[in-house]
Amino acid sequence: MFYIHCPYCGEYRGEEEFSPKGEAHITRPADPDGCSDEEWGSYLFFRQNPRGVHHELWVHTLGCRKFFNITRHTVSYEIFETYRMGEQPKVTEQSLAEALNKTRKEESV
Amino acid sequence: MSDTSCASVATFDTCPDVSIPMESPLSVAVNQVSMSTPAPAVSQESQVQFEEKPFLGHLILRGSAMVLGEAVSEVLGVSLPSQPLGLVFDASGQRSVQWLSPDEWLVIVPSGEEFELENRLREVLGAAHFAIVNVSGGQTLIELSGDKARELLMKSVTYDVHPSNFPVGKAVSVAFAKASAILRRPSETRYELVLRRSFADYCYRWLVDAGEDYGLGVTR
Ligand SMILES: [Zn+2]
View (cartoon, rainbow over the protein chains, first blue to last red):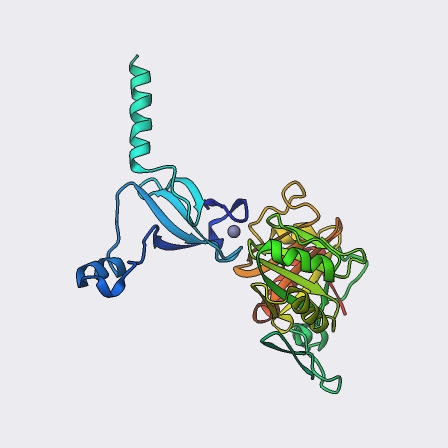
């Protein structure tokens, strides 16, 4: 069982208390009437499906019932971080690649 | 029943007249002794005691901690637990306030006090941005005590109930035997569960079954 850190409860809880809600950081267009069908369609229906780092929306269903974000690896299932609504992720595909490059350089020295 | 209105909100006393018999979510399972599954009695061998505390007043408060904090300390005389998973009692130990989420608290008071409390809170809070919902009819509180109460919980929840992780004054909303329940630690020797009405019978039966090893007895 995964233990997931709820940023609102402030502690790790069993995965059975949580529900995934898909991709995070999807912003509703400010002017829906001004959207083309394509823009509105991609807002409503189209989602990323990356092989690697993914930022996801989760909810602590059986706990505090708050939504929050998880940065997760879709292959290894590793959870890099959890963060509150309105915050930005610290771990991204880019930050991981940079960290990896840094360790490789250090090792080759 | 009496109708009162505070600001623009109409409130009403959900307690029925005394002429109408009240039934707690567990009254059938616990009190009306069924021939097939009678509630196990408390005996010398009972290492866990189960007792329902029916008909308590349960109020859900929603709003910011700043706004609610002042009103709660003025009306109830306890400070609102602003830290996650906090549970505080008043001096008598009869009234409690529990953190449920960053903008939500559960207040439990003795039976019949909830309507007056709700109205007084509404008065004090005035035009502030808040919500109070009386959920007394939707849930019930049960108490587990005895030497093996913690071991019984360990069979029922994945949450770590070891004293180092679950000290007195902590309350968590968790998965309990695949249902949801609020688990509270009011004192060293007792645990409390707040059960939803629709899950109460199931959770009761689960506890009676899981508690058989410890001679669980039901106080009536
Ligand atoms: Zn939580």
